[in-house]
Length: 248
Image (cartoon, rainbow, N blue to C red; front, side, top):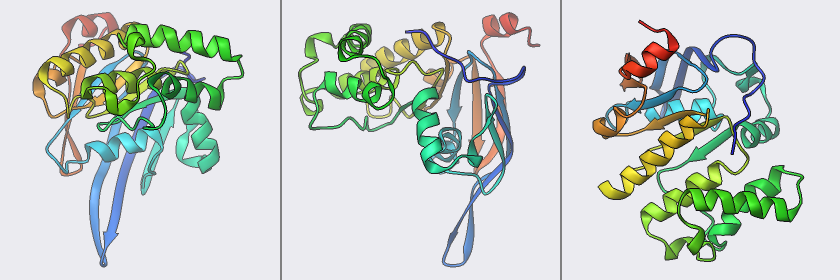
């Protein structure tokens, strides 16, 4: 299913400028992110690495609008996301972002098929048959059509994550954000998910994912490394992508 890119002027798809996020605990200020400056281009495949507590999940929450920066600016397309109300952000997120969580977050009382259809029902005004056709296409793509009537608890961890990926793509988002999508999976299941993420990029989408596995991180075009809330490395390591984009 093709992606639709948010309306934007020429320039990066995602722009984070001097983004910091602080929390307060018993009067003490705790820094989750500090002065982060990152640009992500349309169609990039980006991994985010760092030790536990380095700010990876906070960074993802900034991009998805699940959380908001204490200071700094985030612009996606032509939208300054922190200026949106919660309801506006929810609608914007549903149109533009697909989110995959480490613990799947499938609705346990719905079948696999109904989990995929639900996001379309929340946004899409097409008829039920069209929604079912789209869901069928996605479930075939993640090799789960034969298990469409099962409930999440009846699937393996890898199957649940593939179902979660199909759900994230249901509304044809231009960006996919995945927080530790292979963290609970075996090596074999993790590889299947990585293949699907790679295919998602080949369809023109921008994919950003968090991982602790440096081998899996190296499959991306680019790796961002965080430490104690700070950006310590932003490395393009896919030479083919570098040449394609004209980077040096």
